[in-house]
Every structure is written in structure tokens, then in C-alpha cells.
Length: 521
Image (cartoon, helix red, strand yellow):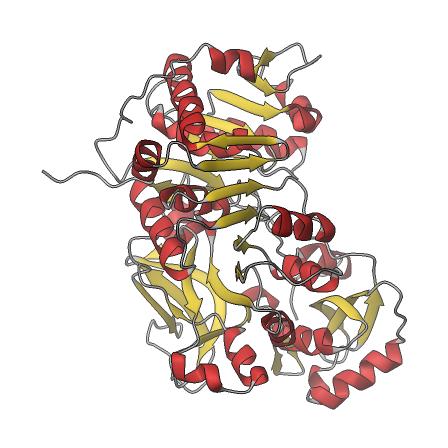
């Protein structure tokens, strides 16, 4: 008999084998696998009493043990988990709760004010509040206590059933609901274990929001190996280093902005070698080299919510470990090669044929295999547009180097065409990051009456540093072809980002194109 695969199986095994081992750290809260299991069973039974099989249950919470428990407890009760981004507007929450047809909302009291205006339009939606003091709504702990703590099997007869409905960040339009299955997420958790070399004795720090495709599968993968999950509600350099030392953290995931924060915060050398997976944007090679000098092993991965979420990994071959640090880091900054369970990943021309492996010809990254989403929830047209002949089209433009390594040059919409010349904003940003005074950089296209459009750089300067526009321009001219040098620079206090760490370039671009008939020239 073929048994359907599910990441819940990792929980079943962990609850059985690792009972007395530490499972969760959340501030002063600490729980063993036995204690985690009891809360998961209670939650599952309450879900079964509250909603029907396949119904959607939404949760709005920071990284916390309650959020972690939901990834097991909600699907264990036969429902579909809808993790909500903690940085949306009330209008977005109302849209997602309505579009998903959520039948229950679990919300942390610290975030209740964010979603309350949306709930005014959803008077029939039951709401359970974590830390409900003074909210006038059901208290999560009291509600959970009514659940059955007795171990019981999770209901699953089809591994292709939806387990989570993850709404994209909506940086360009209304969020889309990405339907991920038990099979999608099971295989993603496995590749997380394989490529990050996860094992018992590891301690994993949740810097990536758990709602972000459940933090690249870490919630399920970490418990699969009997490791410890350390919750972090707010990402700050000093707090991260404190937890890394106190909880002997050995693994974490984070956007390049998190790596930059770690590198820029004064700290003692980590007590254990650190393994960090990063994605969201190509990290500057100089940043990778700086962290590698501290025995911090960087694994650059690439993916999207629609592919569960990562499909390539930038692995350095054993013989390449002897290369000079700068060369090694430059390669690690690429998106890399298809990871073991991703299926097939390739870079193609508009007609679907593969590009040359010459590091020059630009094409779109496409993927087919076990990690590709079931589709967009209740949006068949958008699904058909994204998946053609079984291939998911990422919209990311890349080249393939002679060794098969894929390297993104830009999002299709972020390629800047100035006077007929293609300019990669990623390339320009990488140069800007090399300047010792620059903390963060983002480059977008702005209209230009002569060239059609030209690159504009938004810069965040490191605390205590000063730098002039002329100095930055000269620095760029020393490292870039002149047509790639930004025509203007603007110093700002911080880059607008999604909660998963991606820079919202449309926010930077929008004011310059507001009165233009087209968004590109």
C-alpha cells in the first residue's frame, strides 16, 4: 500500500522518538517534543470541532511557539493553513480573508489592531486571540485547553491535497493565493534537511518570518531531525547575536539584509560554526567573503512561493574550496544549480529553447517538477499564465555559465534599457555595495527625455559615515561601463521591503512614472 507523503509525518515521528528533547525556545517559554505534541493534538482537535475538512484557517502572528504549533495542528485537524503577512494593510487582510474563504482566524494580541478594521466587514468570522486580555474575544490558551491532548493520526488520503494557502506579497498587484500541497512541502522540507545538512543537535534561529512559505520549510524540517527551534519575533542585530550565543544557534535563514545586519553588528565570534541560507536577492560577493572569514558558511538559494519555495542552490564544488576567497564568494553569489528535489530547472528563450551556457545570453528561468504549486487559488487564468505545458515561468531573467551555474541578471520588469543598452540593476547594486560607506542600495529605472530611461540609485549610508554623490558616481565609473553608472543618487533612511526582506522597487519607481503613459521607455 502506498502511503501519502506529508510533512506531518515528520511530526508524528518526532513526537514518538524525541519526547524529552528540547523542541522550542520562545523567549522564556521552553517546550520539549512531548509538550509540543500535546499542544498540537489539542489544536488539531479544536480545529476539527470548529471547521470542516479542507476549510481554511488563517493565522496572524509573529514568529512564536503558537505560530509554529499551527503549522502542525491546523493541517493535523484536516484544515488548510493560511499564514498572514504581518505587514499588510487592513484592506489586504480583508481581501485575503474573503478570497481564501477562511472559516477561523487565530491572531496574536500584538497584531489585533492591524486586522481589526478588516474584521468589521467579517462579523461572522470566529476569532481566537493569543494573549486575549481585554480584547473581548476568545482566549487562545483557554480555547486550546478544551482540546483533546490524546495522540491521534492526522487525516490524509491524498498527498496532493492543499496543506497551506500562501498569499504572495502583492508588490505589483492584489496578492495571489499559492496552493501548496502535502507533497510539495514534504519534498521541500527534505531538501532543506539535505542542503543545510540539518541534524539532531542543531539549533535553528527563526529570523525569516514563519508566514513566508513557513520559512522555507524550516518549521517541519527542524522538528524532523529532533533539533531546536528558536523563535525570534523581531529581527535586530544585537538580539540575533545574543540568541546565537545563548542558544548555541548553528543554522538560520535570512534575506541578504539580515546577513548585512549580522555582519555590521559588533559581536564575538560564534561559539559554533554557523550555516546560513539566504535568498530574496543575490547577496553581494563581498558580504559573503566577509562572513566566510568568520566560519559562517553561506548557502545561497533561489526560488519563489510558487515553487515551495526554492529550486536552486549555489554549492561550491570540493575542488573549488581552494580558490581565492574572492573567486569562491563570487560563485556563491550566483543562484547556482537545480537542487536535488526541484525537478528540472532551465533558462530559456521566448520560444522555449535553452539559452547558451556562455554567461551572456539572457533568458527566463522556468521549472517543472514536484515543487511547483497546484496553482493560484480560484484564479485559473493566472495559473494558466504562470504554468505553460507543465513549466512554471518565474519571470526572472538569468544567464547560464559554462559550468551550468545560473545567475540572475534581473526581474524582467527591472531590466533598464537606456539608449538601447540593457543594464542589470543587480550588477549596479553589487558595485554600490562594495563602497565602504554604503549599507544598502537599490537601483530602478526612471524616465529620461534623451535616453528613454536611466538608472537611479537609492542609497542607505552606514551610521557614522558620510559620502557625496560625486564620490559615489566616481566609484561607479571605476567599476562599471559608463552607460551603467546611475545618472542620479538619492540618500534615504531605509529601503522599503516586504516582510520576507525583498526590496519593493515599485515603491521607489512609482513616483517617477506616475504621469507616464507607460511604465518603461
